Length: 206
Image: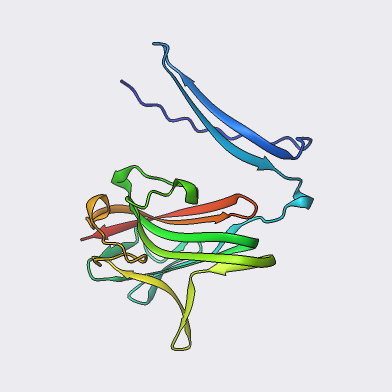
């Protein structure tokens, strides 16, 4: 019994025709077992891209003190303790039409690493924010920002809270524990079926 990690980059040829494609990942082992995964994706000419969602202005604070700003860490690792207020801000730009944005905390021990909204398992994720948008015009943005007392803030959660941002009890696989988590930003444009994500490591001492 062995596990294998496959990490491969490939370049879409410049002359590749636009259209919808199937990506197949097929594993055969020496005993004749076979695993086949299929993912849908679409190729656009850059000049014809209807949306190009990008994670932008992702900012995290602990008890209103900034600890992370767009790839810059104020401390490494970022540590939260029970009772701390975790404020997560995120913005997605270069979008239009309809879509949905999540921010969530997920324990790494659950081996759940979603890269799309469709793959997000709500039984394994502590949701901080859920934002939906409708009928946005070209080159629009969506974010989790809020204006509080004249200052820009974001959705927050208390480490140890009984309920998450959707009002669901934090129990079962999702219950708070000490350990390493990922703060995951997931966005799907449902009009054009295009997605993006970002994952930032967080440590919780409970």
